[in-house]
Length: 287
Ligand code: GDP
Image (cartoon, rainbow, N blue to C red; front, side):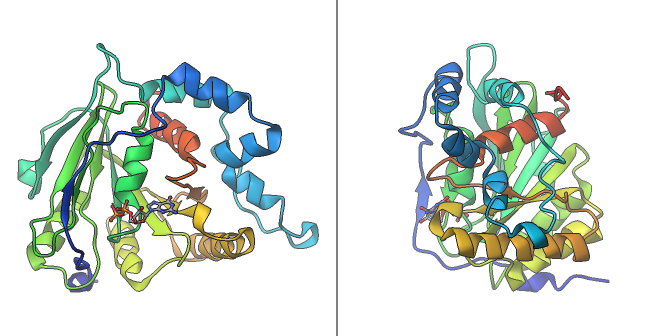
């Protein structure tokens, strides 16, 4: 069945921005994780395993399965994964190129992951947070209405490429939708698609279009819940349970474990880095 692709589109927003992904939190890997490991246990859990922290607030008699332990790395694994996101002379993390069509995309043998989501879902903030250990990386942001939307490619050393797909919304120009669809359908080195959902508002109708696309092309994909610092614990828990139920009941290709993140508090960022390093075949998790 053809997807109603025209419903994907561009939300009108005011400006074009190309920003340096500099973060006040940038620091070396060892410093970063040494700091994390010194946190009191509750704070450490909240920062590194946000889903686990949320689970504590579920009523013990009616505890639904949040699939917490499917990807359950140790703190050592997570520390090792941070190393993949730290730029050195031998391991450069950098913006590679942009493309408006799949045949303009760099021809790469490296594994690839892509990030997709509605405009304003927090995609560029998340990518900047993931790359905060490499503050020189230039994370590109294009938001001007009517301006050509591009796929932006970032190289994580020789290990993998991260692709920032254009944000979607309403009133999509046909060529924009064609680009996203062609990429998802035909990119052979695409290992995983990360579909971003705003945890404050949950799954929206436009998100459903992207979900349908992933399902139709039988892509393995993962749901990342953004902006988790914005809601009360109760509201966040409600959204997480609703989205978890949706994933369990209505998807085939979606990874059962959700990845809640905040680009403000960095909650969930270390775990997501570890998952990225793992699914691109670069980090074996010690069981
Ligand atoms: P994009 O259009 O998907 O790239 O979204 P942006 O990264 O530009 O974020 C859209 C808005 O949400 C901006 O005002 C961000 O500051 C805000 N935002 C993004 N991530 C977070 C987050 O984790 N927490 C909070 N509180 N705000 C966020």
